[in-house]
Length: 222
Image 1 (cartoon, rainbow, N blue to C red):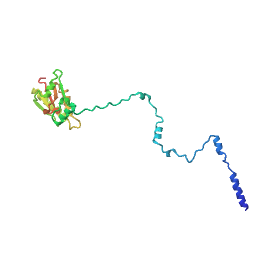
Image 2: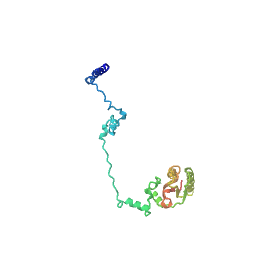
Image 3: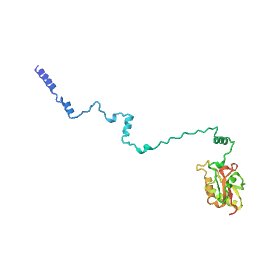
Image 4: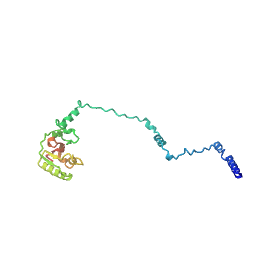
């Protein structure tokens, strides 16, 4: 019984002992705030919205004032051509259907040249077939070096025979991955090592090879 009263007295004394009773008031007076453990979470576990991520990424971005005055160039509205009224479309349709031939001088593959001492209209007449072809050489299947040697021998022989107009077949290079190599080489040679023999040249007519062949007018006297 004595022990029972002693235990109750100990409990009563403990309930009166509250050393942290005024701790909250003391912390408020010193502007000290405790973090709430239930709401504290590590930043890495907090899921941010797209807007928050964007704002954080744009914190150090500054506006360039000089760009504000740059005028915006709006695209001009496209003009649509009526197929019934456009002559170019009609011409293309005729060419595709075979009703009309392509005018070779209007194509980017067409080539021509005339010596400065000769009338300029000679290339037009040459292309139109006013000069009869007296001999020709076919360079198909030859390498550039082989073609140069063969052409040199051909032109020397033509000059010796005093031929006026000859034809060189070189092709268009449509199957070559490097394009019209022989055609480009021919133009280079005619303006280079063979220039002393040449008066004029032009792309051949359709029936003579068209864009894949070239007419050449030679000097009969050197």
